[in-house]
Image (cartoon, rainbow over all chains, first blue to last red; front, top):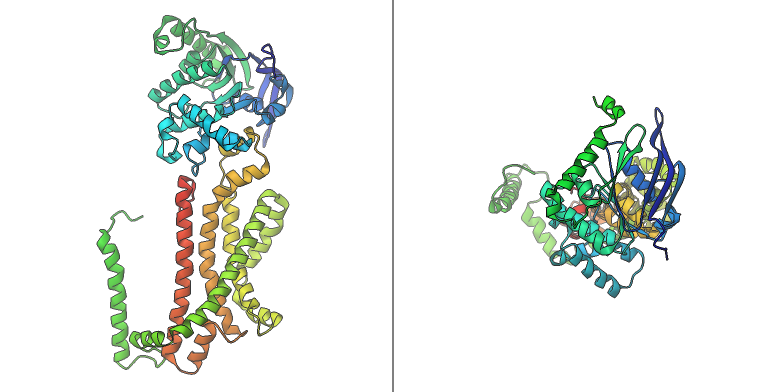
Length: 266
Length: 260
């Protein structure tokens, strides 16, 4: 289908302008980004830096005003229609009238998988996210963390080679968050999917990513890209290693270091 | 709802006690001899009801059928038009003033006209009145329900490349269903009232309303009241069935339903 050399995401000179009551608002300008197949890239920055907008452009939920964007060498629209990516948002967005199993199966149902293949795949996915005992439950019977696991399983349903995640752990408590980060790192390496991960948490970005893309607002643009590939497995020990702290510091400096940014802060 | 919840036995006993007290007062009022001639005591009404049960049931069947047909037809039309208004914006713009106009029309006032239009031997005028009365609450509630999907859910369906029909069937409609059924519950009572009151304005000589009017005019108070009881029974059945339907569906749809 795609050669290994085709990047998962290729963006060149992306700009996005939203019309507003007081004229036009430039949300993104001159964004160049390439995400290799199987690579985990985080987008980090303050609110309004356009990181979510960039993700929505890749997902074809919005259209770029300018620039060139391809997903696995196709237009974003084609990639969406071909289901080349799976997506998870900050809100799990589960359908409350469907069981966990039926929520996970939703993308498969929409693409007319047969019932037996659907059921087999749901069993696999529930196992992958540790929800095997909860497939018959309804979303309102689950904790926030478990709902988010369902959302992640759902995003993985059609075995996409690209995962788009918009602050999926943003609404969770710190403990749940760390546990799900460890699980996501495992899932990403097991499935070999590329991930574009939007977050405003520096430790989260550093722990999960091969590269952290630092963005800055007004207008939204990329100011720095920091290599955070760990030379080891992403496990609990990594969180306490010196190189991890060093990278957290590097990302923090990149986030706060630009003089322009400082001037903008109160 | 209320902070201090009553113990369960009291929640049953209290309304029963109020009911019994009311009936006792009613007996006392009639026994005192100051009551109007048209108000017999409850026992007389109950006796009349027991003696004429087949007659009351027959009349109730006529009125109930009219109300049911009106409710179903009005609801189907309302849901179809609400779906159309949601998917196609111009329809919304076109129907909004029409619905507002329909909502302020005293619908039973149309009955003499409809009865004349469709002839004195036809039930259609009554059914049409019930249908029009049912249409408005179902339409208004369904239209609101169809707009209750959350942005994250719509994004998800778009991102998953769902087509319009799939999005409607798997997201929009299930989200709207509790609202729709609330509309049907409200419409059910309106349909019964409209079908019954419509009988006061002519048409075929059958139905609960016709019987009440006839016996009230001829001074057979207890029998007129027995038919009123029949009317109450129809209303109760419609209310209970639609409430049950609403509750079952809300439970099935989980926390996604509207707040009662």
